[in-house]
Structure formats: C-alpha cells, structure tokens
Length: 53
Image (cartoon, rainbow, N blue to C red; front, side, top):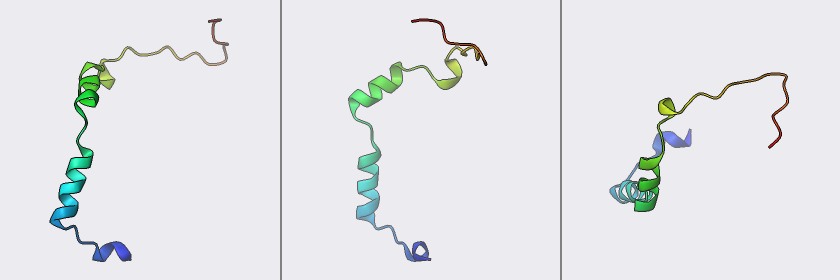
C-alpha cells in the first residue's frame, strides 16, 4: 500500500492548515446559520403531491 510510506512534512502540514481556514465571509455566514439541531423539523408527507407554489 502506498499510503503506508506517506510522510507529512512541516510544509505540507502548514499548507493544509492555511487551506482549511475559512475566509472571514465564510465564518460570518456560518455563525449566522442555525445549527442542525436548532432547525425546525420538516413534515414528511409520503404519497401526496406538493402544494402549488
């Protein structure tokens, strides 16, 4: 297996950390969004058509 010989260097780790950081705009949008367990549950209707929009 090729992954057994994988070595993460300091440079690779620093780049990965920088790439994974959200931009300030992304962070603000995430802060405004409700968490999954705070969202109201949707009613699931099976076999019925969706109401006209």
